[in-house]
Image (cartoon, rainbow, N blue to C red; front, side):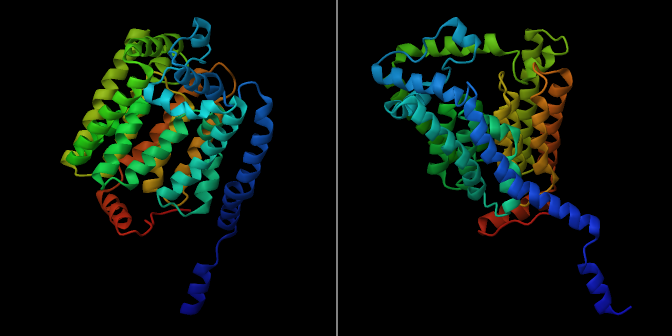
Length: 385
């Protein structure tokens, strides 16, 4: 057989591979767009569309404008997850949206939330259109925009932090703002220190102090106690919900105290992992992956929309479509039946572990290749479908 014949044979895809490629392209293209459009039509018929915005964020902003505490809620509202339990900066940021009718604000917030997914991927230099499509099928993405939660905004902010990580003042501003908006992202500060970004760390501290002084000055420094009480009440009422470490262990008979103790031990281990990856292995990317894992594990209340944070390290190391991008779609299995069963809790953690472990353990050569290509402005090209 001639060399030309061999080359022709290599170029010819097997039937199974062609079928697999076509299936993936359909799932990531027409099907994902059609499903998103269908959900946008059907979901508004539910009673809790944009629930977080409509029942908590909008009212908090309204109260700030009226000079009233955004942290006064009834016990029933706390139990139903309808109370505002975020720091003052979040309340101040929602004040402008409360100037328009709540229904219009909910629509705007929802559509901006949807737009943040492609924007985040674009910021992270993902150019494979199939990634955009498959990510739109993620259950965490659906929950994020359907409830109009802050999580998609945090995801976008985290993507921006990575993109500008070598600009100290801008990195510090974004990190300080994100942590002030949602303490869930406190590990960002640890990552800045661990990767020896001293100027960015100082900027983050300065901006964090300035933003909090500004926000609490508007809300009232006397409301700090009310905020802490609201946050503690929300945790006490909802700690069994979602799939945070305490809630997950409660499914298997572990008491609340034991669950929080295990969470503390896991957080200590992950924090040590961030420091080791950055200071010993000199790997900012594995340290960043572990930072995201630490943010999720350290949250006593963990809902599926927080999993959108995983998109950032996944996009950094897998800018082209591969099998890891399909795993968050499996989170849909956690929706039925309700309440969550033991196997669903286990499935959620297995999915996150299977996504994050390969990213954190990728070879140093791969990390260098990705970092170098990003700094040079080119697209990284790891193995993909």
